[in-house]
Length: 123
Image (cartoon, rainbow, N blue to C red):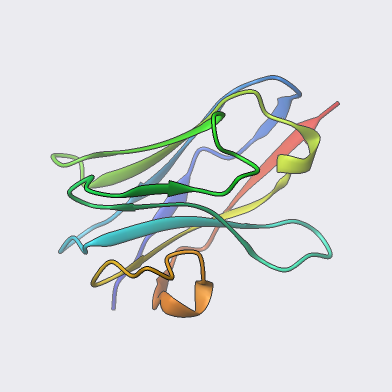
């Protein structure tokens, strides 16, 4: 069983920054992504990357503000979030799959999920 552990979510003011972490114990997979779910809404794609950094993709709503990265030694994926807006408020989930897919934006293509970390952006 693959267990992803997210951390870093908290209350922040509009315009602030946060860095979310996703620890990946054990083996690493080829593709990692972040999704988010706001209250009363469906879970939506935020960003995805190949572990070897050959591909990184962002949702239009976060492009230019959010940045994906990873630390090989720490086996951790990071989501740096700058210029936060109230509409970024959501539970953020880290997920992974064994191989990269062109449908990286579809949550149905991911098998393993973390428990989520709450990000609240206050105005």
